[in-house]
Image 1 (spheres, one colour):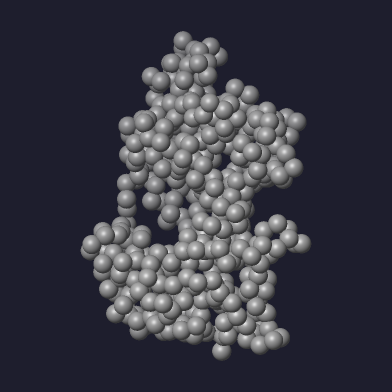
Image 2 (cartoon, rainbow, N blue to C red):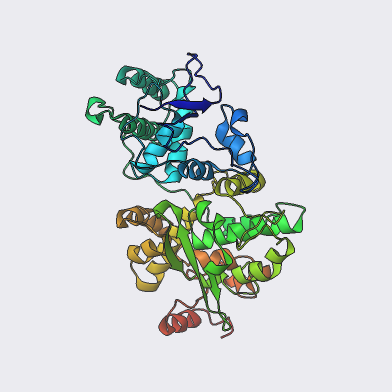
Length: 441
């Protein structure tokens, strides 16, 4: 049995029974999850757990401790051999369930952190879920209220069901006894993305009076739309050692994918690698990053105005607070992930221009999709936008403004195919030149 060692007082609204952040200790020889070494290095201790309240994740992050790091700390104190195969719901804490999810269910720490956050929401809801005495009827009442009264969608309901399943597995409950089925996800949802001229306007907005902060946002947005990485997890952890640029201005970026257990993929966004007239990776690393780099910067590419690396959630909040409100004056439906949607569609359109067909396999590898079906979902959107604007969208984003695109930019606005780049064949180049006799060769 699990014996509680210490805790802070955190109770459900409808019961005085403590439900979260308790710690266990099987016997004097086993390891405990109780740890106070959460801040200040190995020799500095802070009794931080006593101060954590209902918004514990916000508290941890405001003190420079993400939920993932917190889980790392308590995992180091756990002896896997001694850890129970199943937990007793009457005395198990959310920490215990989190450890079980990582050790026994093989879930990623990022996933576990999200599910613990969801569990806290469910526990403190007006129709709460009782995790101390879980019952199917209690859970269904909560889900029915969420669906009918609060109009929660398939995504929110699915996440809460995944959270409940994590707890049930930890408690050794057979899922066959809980026949709940959340609403199905639509097979296809049309992607609404900005057109290239709108994105070009977005990239040239003034986001801050501080030169570095303004440049940071503009460069991040440019790289987001052209690279199409998962925001914010992938750019937040990008390091200088992941960016290769040689003396002949050839280069590539190695992207680490936290969503795929830190797998890596390589992309070659030639448009923004070394071009000195654009917001290129080389310009950022050589000219802007050094302005704030300090002893805290480590090897990270994107730094806060204070010179510190971004955490995943802090980068999301930074863009949401400092960029999104102004962007929505140009494109009201903007959200950070729309840059990845745009890149998927734009690169499919590029393959259509180059090879006369949509090459979903090339785009799959670029975006790092695990399944080709994920990429195929973008083909219908790409075909829709291609019929309206059959030119290279990425080039148009970077060259739509005549002030930065050169003397050909205005002409490109009226042509069906934008300026050629390194991906076009010699035949394509000749065809394009022949169709634009006014332009210099």
